[in-house]
Length: 504
RNA sequence: GGUCCGGUGGCCGAGUGGUCAGGCACAGGUCUGCAAAACCUGCUACGGCGGUUCAAUUCCGCCCCGGACCUCCA
Image 1 (cartoon, rainbow, N blue to C red):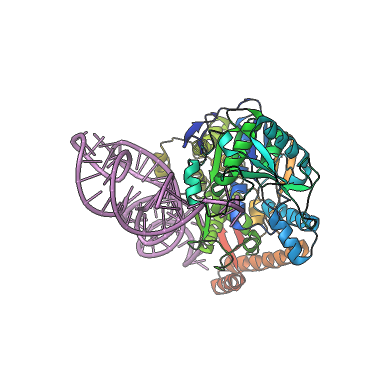
Image 2: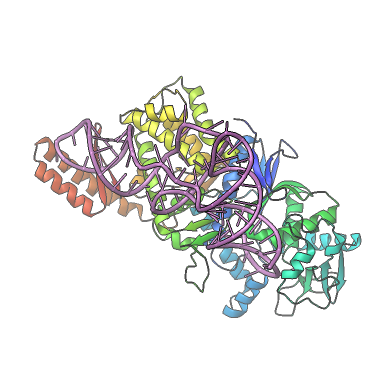
């Protein structure tokens, strides 16, 4: 597969060819969550999008380091603690664990490193000291501020001039700021607020400095890709970039800046006041299938476009997965001798990802592979699809399915055992990354395996009885059994190899 | 108000200066004891008005509509 990857760079506002600084080692940083509450749907989008990017990069390059931070010091966390009485450390530990569970349920592999802000105070202080020494920051009344006028490129990423920003600013300018645009690197803490000793007294970091410090420690002064939600471009990423470049005197902080689009719910921005605020848990509660279905739903829209979440869309994604898994459940291992065309098929399906992660087109190609496999294993004609896509691939049982499996793996989809999925039990998936096997689980709660086993046995018995009735041409009885199962949500499919069943 | 991004068939959603996206839904058909599944066929869209061009959904301008950001926000 070619490594010619194009990515839309927010910095240049164009699709740039991705050229790693070190072709042997790609370095990626993504802004992670502030851990004070359960992850909402919007939090999940960058996690899934950049999980896909990391998987793709791992396919293209020998080594990838993917860093995603945990913000565990922030005034929202403090406020929550004061409100509920739960200690800050307990809130952040619990919320971090919840976040990990939820993201695993979406099939997102853990990042290679997950630094925490509270473990990175020392490098933050180092950075701030460098900025002061460089003349890019100054201390005032217990605060340390970044001097925006000291950095001529300020505003480059978000595409706005300092005057524009101030014209629209809705906030009062603090008296200790030399310039209204200056932002806080360090601020003093009251006794009830979390704080650390520093050259400027007991205090805590500003919002942006943590990412400059953590990306520096994990990836170096300049790295390849920096990602996050579109809403982070200003001020967060603009300020991060300013801090890092001024601290190190580099022309770039990251070469490529990627930003995912926002998520709406039923056409409106998610907000607690509108009552349309949905957590990932709310989605996962719909069923064992919901985690993977939500992942697919996210990938069905290009990452840079805004996405309007609906439960109807989630159901549609579930139906698509059912069809994929049904195909995989039928598939046999392909005969030897088709390795070249198998690789060609998988690369063809994945090729759209190289064009700025065009997941909708890649998913359409996956469906075409599915059609080819269905023709090979069930019957019908693949002439139309092969003609449309301009290929003359052999229609051999198991071949397109194997290519599908490989390509879907890069998208992080269809990792469950197909028969288990169809019977309502998505199984744990695993992936090998840098020689390490990482496990992802699609579902939050595992129903008792024993209960499933006994119910399955009961269904199998009913299916056998119906088969016997059919053999005796007692179709009334056969149909009665089928209807009875259907009422329980069990769908039967008669095939040449016998009857299979699935949970609808 | 400033900056930016979008408006594609009933719905979702890619893409392109000139024969095709794709999916869902819907309607026919093949297969099947009947179903289901699978496959085939149909459904021929690009917000409005101008402009450039032999040719525009695709490029340019204006307008309308929606959304994001403007120091809490993925």
